[in-house]
Image 1: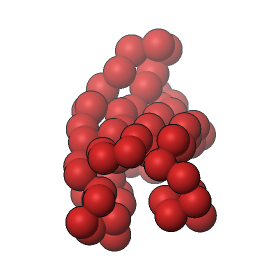
Image 2: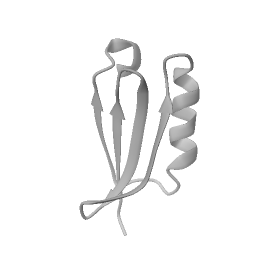
Image 3: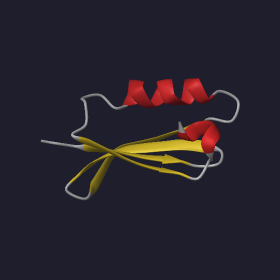
Image 4: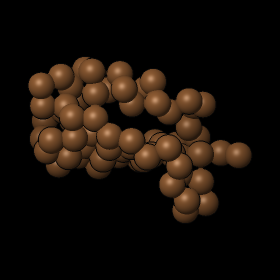
Amino acid sequence: MTMDLLIDVGNTRLKWAMCDAGRLHDVARAAHRADPAGAVDSLFDGIGAPPARVRAANVAGERLGA
């Protein structure tokens, strides 16, 4: 089964989920304002198997967009 990783970088939280055939799995989130690196570590710890693709949206601006 191939899964896509969906990432939403919002103004206060990083949210992510694995997606297969339009169904979301393992939905999670982490606050990133105080500790952006810790939020990204949480994402990598939570995704399990490598995704086939990564799709991301960022409204947090350049601070977290790089």
